[in-house]
Length: 259
Image (cartoon, rainbow, N blue to C red; front, top):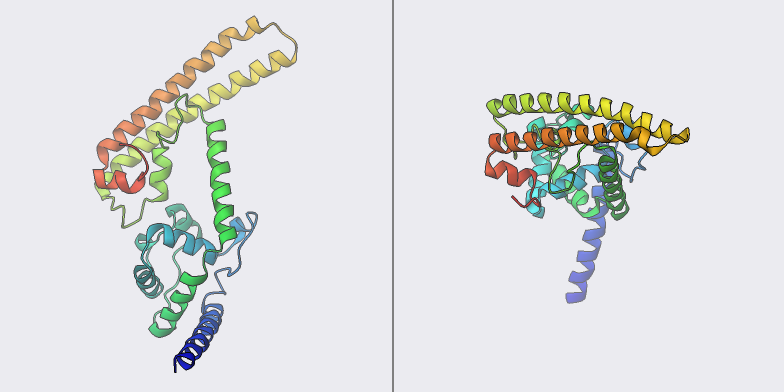
């Protein structure tokens, strides 16, 4: 009897997996890539790859039953405010069309189970983490800030990535104030960056021409002064943003930041 039940269970699992695979191909593959994309493919996709979708879903939601409920609800009633992806990705790809009345809830449940069990692929997760590491290094290299550590996050960038998420819950008043802070910060930083770029190019050229180091000391001092100014702008942005956001919103945005 036990062997029979075991056999039925195995057969059922295989049939279920095959059914899920067929359903996801029939209903999702037209827009979502079902295999892992390479980095060069990502900008050209018409919608996020399924690996990317589930990477973000599993970052935002931990319990399997909640993930399943989210997938079923989102595919039937999609909205930007429900998205777990960054807001810039929603702007890039748009909101998916509703599958309500096109795919039964039973089939959506099967698709959801298959997505949970098969995505994201480990190699995709490794690739994304490597991209994130490279982006972090690039940001440090190209930043004008003297103070630039993970403990002092780029507030405006992180906010824009989560701007429309219902789980962040920004009010219209908060958004208005934050946009003012962003505009002032970006204008000030871009002004400093342009000046620093010119000065650093002059310093490099002078050294390449074999000039005495003393000839560029004044420009080096000016670069240091400008970077200090940019750091003050950065700190002002952080202070003003903290004043606008609630403790719960800060915890949502920066769960690993020691407040």
